Image 1 (cartoon, rainbow, N blue to C red):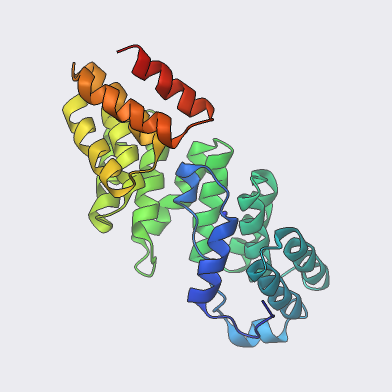
Image 2 (cartoon, rainbow, N blue to C red; image 1 turned 30 degrees about the vertical axis):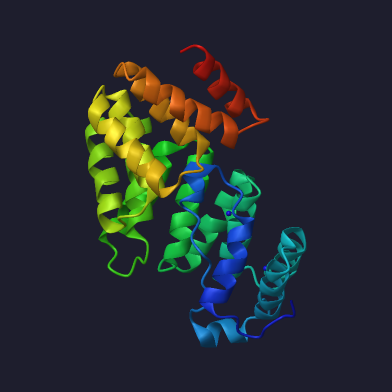
Length: 267
């Protein structure tokens, strides 16, 4: 945001391998949707791009993203209408944080196959990487009405974050609450909701959400930093010092770790 080439890799296997390529920041990594290799079998098999698409999936299993992109480009040169090749190209560009190129391929994938839900998810994530919040929101909103969407919590999470960035905190909270309603152990949803509630001055509610995020993802240092900030605002300095200390240890040697060390020392 993959071993020998397999003629028809299943969705679970390709999913576990491709997650390694999801190199987006925390917000976008939650948008990382596993590429499905199912689809319109007849048209896919008839396309001259299909062979190169299969070659690319094999390369992704081997974690050779650049080689996979080259293979997909060869296939698209033969058949520029192969939707899944555009989708996989866009997904890989997104993982390499080349969001502009990702958008080009993902938009084309959706034009060719509007029912390719994973392409819509990834396109929205790429728009978010470019801070094009309204474009991301417009792309995401149809997903919450889509009964076949397998990851509604991701859609609600990202919609909520877009609304936050666009200044609509009420709708932001509504959608982030829906994200954790759909997936009870979604630590990123709790984290984002905590940030929005903190920005609105609802510190006790923010504390509860950030503590839940910490419980689910105890090694996410940024959560500890934000939670410590809330503890300080609530005059719970001992608790703040403890989470800053944990943050410092987890993020040792990084800028974030230094920030936590500074905050810990100030108390």
